[in-house]
Image (cartoon, rainbow over all chains, first blue to last red; front, side):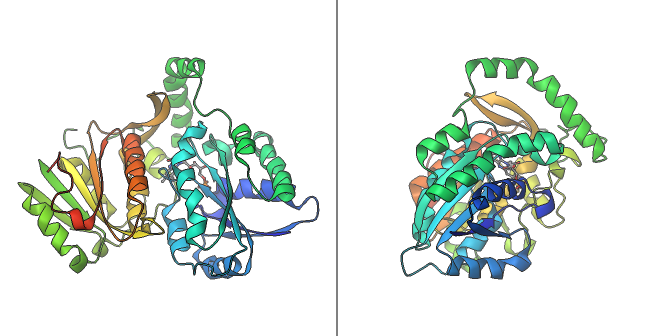
Length: 220
Length: 168
Ligand SMILES: Cc1cc2nc3c(=O)[nH]c(=O)nc-3n(C[C@H](O)[C@H](O)[C@H](O)COP(=O)(O)O)c2cc1C
């Protein structure tokens, strides 16, 4: 079965975690002979093609980074410009990945995605959720592969079932909340570890000031 | 209570609501975002890692960032699409990132970014068009949780005169 994949990330394809995840997912999806195509909305030149692919396909996956509890503005702009389908038979599934580790962070967005397909004249086929993805694009090949392998597995699964069932998603998404032990560890070591690693990243980018600078402070 | 009104709608569509809101606040300012030509966030993370607190996109958004810090409360006037706010409003919200630092901490059992400023933001939404109000309320709560602030709720534009009763 052919799958149209729309990448709703704002970051250019070469730097997008979503793009990397889609590539891993496709590998699994296409293993048993299914086919797929990808459209990246960060490149506005692809919007017309993506809209045509949406109209012509009955099997669609929209992959996106969580942006302030919902879809990125550019994805919303694209979706709002689509012509809703008038004949039944199209399904849309979603893949949401975010920076925070807990699955609970994606639930507000998931709630919206559950009803979005209907507004586009389509049926809902589930939402795959994964957190803790911020660092993906900064990892070396080996570390990255480790993180991406489960998406290849889910691609295989989706080729079989054409759905992300709630139970499968729950097992894949990992803990809904951090455990008490994780919270304790975070409180003890989070700050110094973050200062070290984020400080290094910032230095690489040429940042010279503190990461908690207040350039527009009005005494706040 | 000083009030910032951020209007993302065509000015004539927002006129009545702006009038109602300004009449209910002793000190207010209206910013119409149309002329500011605000772009979507590009996810560069420079506001966290390269120029902390400043967005790399050179458009009119900086004026808004400064205004959020100056006023006690902000009300956004937004259009709707697909039962939600439209992309103009969502772009504004995505661009709030410079108000947080990249550092994270745990608040009520969930990870949050450490706010950049010691400011209790109070943001409310007045929407024009069809939308799921319960969902917008939920989303605004979550948005404000991320900023360490409070949501003043989401109201349809027809209720501009009596919306946000505890604040205005
Ligand atoms: C504007 C903006 C808003 C974000 N909002 C959230 C959020 O609400 N929750 C979350 O877990 N991650 C959030 N993130 C983190 C991204 O979802 C995460 O880093 C993702 O892996 C980026 O994917 P991409 O490289 O394809 O853009 C946000 C990032 C940006 C730039």
